[in-house]
Amino acid sequence: MIAEETLVQELKSKESQAKAFEVLVNTYKERLYWHIRRIVLDHDDADDVLQNTFIKVYRNIDGFKGDSKLYSWMYRIATNESLTFLKQKSKKMGIGDQELKERMVENLQADAYFEGDEIQLKLQRALATLPDKQKLVFTMKYFQEMKYEDISEVLETSVGALKASYHLAAKKIEAYLKAD
Picture (cartoon, rainbow, N blue to C red):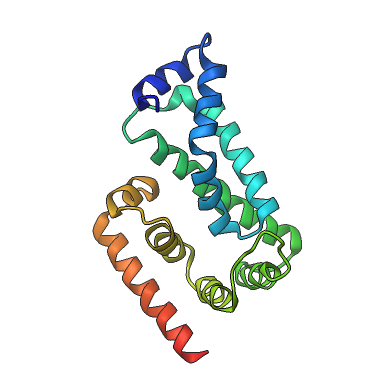
């Protein structure tokens, strides 16, 4: 595994950029795919957003200052790309955000790449009722087991606010699952 600082230097160098970008993609594609997939739910949509994420990373690597970890910077790009994608999708379909979320969960059952059972579908329905920030915090903490400090870097918010968001999300999910 290449050191992050070395990888960033190689990504910024025209001579080593292509090879370094290949290393970057191979290192992070699976983690980023699943992060994106938990936001957009659909496999094909996640692939499209992942591709857009890597294009943005490639085009903007010179602007990466190193103030945060490289993966945090890429997760932030992936998160923003995912949310933008969903906004554009709901606009294209002429429906609101909540209706789009509900349709996405319903489409999961027909998704050949979804391996979840009825309990997983229930959880996805519960997640669809959450505001975007609470859903992001919950999925990053619960599914990806990220530390609050790392989520804080990605979402650019305080650890305290994240803990509050996670707690609220967990309570709403619990209430949803009990009511169902």
